[in-house]
Amino acid sequence: MDLNASPLPEDDDHEEPVELDFGQDDEDHVESAVEIMRREREERRRKLKRDQPDDGPRPRPQQVRNDHATQNKIGGYKRVKETPQGWMDCPASGQPIDKIIPSKVPLDETFNESVPPGKRYSSKQVVNKQRKAGRDIGLVIDLTNTSRYYSPAEWTKQGTKHVKIACRGRDAVPENEAVNTFVYEVLAFHERQKPSRNPKYVLVHCTHGHNRTGFMIVHYLMRTQLSSVTEALNIFAQRRPPGIYKTDYIQALYTFYHEIPESITCPPTPEWKRPSDLDLNGEAKQDDDDDNGESAPSPDPVDDKAITNDDVLGDAVPFDQQDILRGICFKLLDFVPNGRANAQFPGSHPVSLNSENLQLLRQRYYYATWKADGTRYMMLIMRDGCFLIDRNFCFRRVQMRFPIRNVNDTPYQVVD
Image 1 (tube, rainbow, N blue to C red):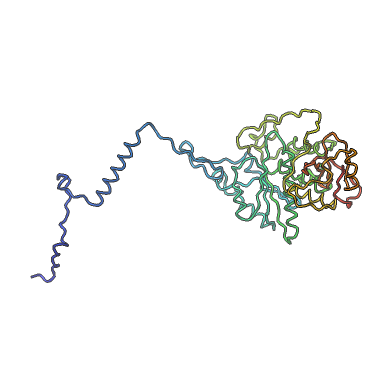
Image 2 (tube, one colour):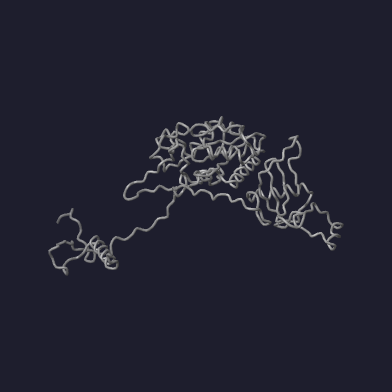
């Protein structure tokens, strides 16, 4: 008797060893767990193939394109996002102008394959560079006409406000409504920063940070400081050399502010604009950041028609600014609104001067009189512009100037 021998198993615990013999009949073969799993998987595969007849290659599901996400492959090849023309060697940013920093557009990490490490300029690098110079960015205004350069979330997730004012870079200067929005956003931001000991800065960029960016900043200087277009252009050129280098932008500024310069001097095209970026006349091509990749259509020619009674004059202003302007009017007239959502401006609604309404002059004070026909407007004159007020108490900006001898005089006036 071998004492080292293992005890024999009980009858109910005894298992006969399974021998796999692929030459045996199916009825004598016992499948293992692995074989059962493989067989069931193969049966499912065959069933799916029977249920889906082969009608040719099935199209892949269409994916929604996200300009901020990397488009991995196109036609089997990896896509490399190209930088805007002339962007690589364009200086990153200029010096602040009234806490406004002109800059070229930052590019996110999806452009890294086409930008060498020493040339990269992302939102993180913008923040770090400006912080080293003692400047914190609190507002970013994007003037490009596309969304493919970066996601606004790169700014908002770190507490920086991002405002998109899309402006065409081809065949047109920024529209007046876009200029009104830009000036209002900057002024409102500066107003919110006044209580702060360390006010933050505004970063403004188009594609290269010269023409559209300079156009907006010159408008801001003209509306907030007593200067001429020539002076404002020179200020921008000193802080962001060489300044605005497109002739049509410079001419549009002089025309808008009713100034006739002795001569218009346009800076030469910057060196970082490669020869391939020049047109047949040797001048700088328009910025190419339109989403459709094609030249934007030229604006329709202005048709000099007679003004009718129902024509809308001036340019639209932001909704938030409308409320501010209404408050200024109420203050000037010592008028307390009754809390209605659309409080009417006193005097905007015309009342016919007949025998029945003559007694109204004894009951209420009327602020203005005007004849019965024509479009009825009041005008609010401010240091940064003039605004027409219609009978619905809505405001539209008109480019008019009312010089005053003493700059310390009241900056607000309401006239008929």
